[in-house]
Length: 221
Image (cartoon, rainbow, N blue to C red; front, side, top):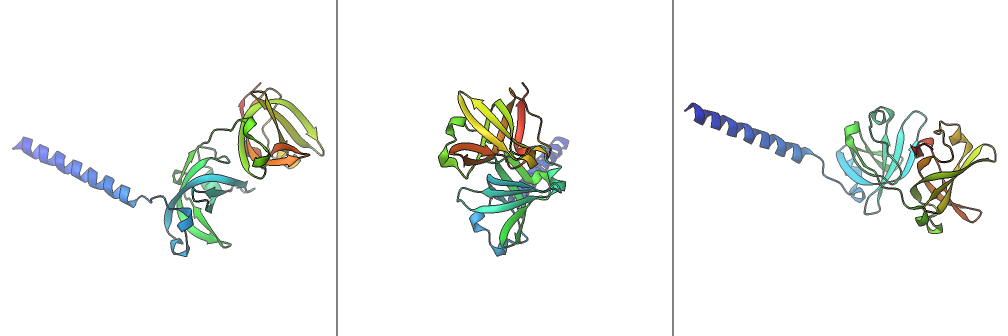
């Protein structure tokens, strides 16, 4: 009798756990296509996923992303400083993210606003080979990695780094205000990863840095 009661208790416990798990799964927001967001979603909690195609930092510590999904639609994702401070993963241009948050409308554009670091999942994308950066990429974001073969100051404090990888070269233009804004100290021989915007300067392809946090020292010389 006691054995039967124990078995019954165990079965009830397992059934209860299964019910709790099923409820958790059903309550978890499914991925919502960005293109489907409309005013009926305002105030609702949704999950969206896509690639970070723009990245802007605020002096107060906030981070503003533009995320594009497979449909090509965009949504703004403001990550406020309190939430950003909790993040263990850095977010870089072209990373894939899954964001869960409340839908809002700000200046005519939809936003998904995460409340906690757990609402943000990041899958880092690998840098592309320097040989793949061409004129056709001008105006688009890119992430590269290479060894600094040259470092020079130009104009009024601007920094230009020349990266080398497998015999290919690309210049990284860093405006003076970014140099003064806490750019990591870098030297010839350092291996760095950079994400920025591809542009043409005097007919040559270069990468322009738009934030000090977009340069990461991977290995010192």
